[in-house]
Length: 115
Image 1 (cartoon, rainbow, N blue to C red):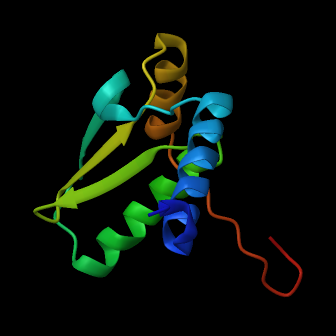
Image 2 (image 1 turned 180 degrees about the horizontal axis):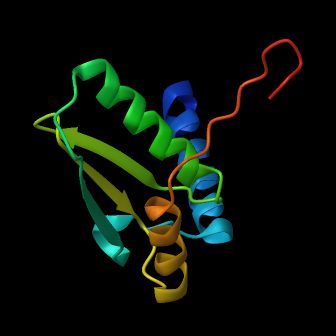
């Protein structure tokens, strides 16, 4: 009985070999749970409704993703708190991220070609 005659066994072996090669070349990317990271907890001045909280979450995500961070997780609870988990522990980068979070955003709108 030759197990290599079964097509599914051959496909599984090929996938296993390719996956092993991929991991050997690129290495594992550890997230916040394994390699450490930083967690920020922001408290809003007042409670907001669900739609406003979703806008707050998306705005924070966009501001942090523009900096090139890959593993950003923004969550909220009690319509007053926002938690930000970042897989970054370098003190200089954490300080830069904290500075970004502390700055107030700036909204610009064009109306009839005027800012």
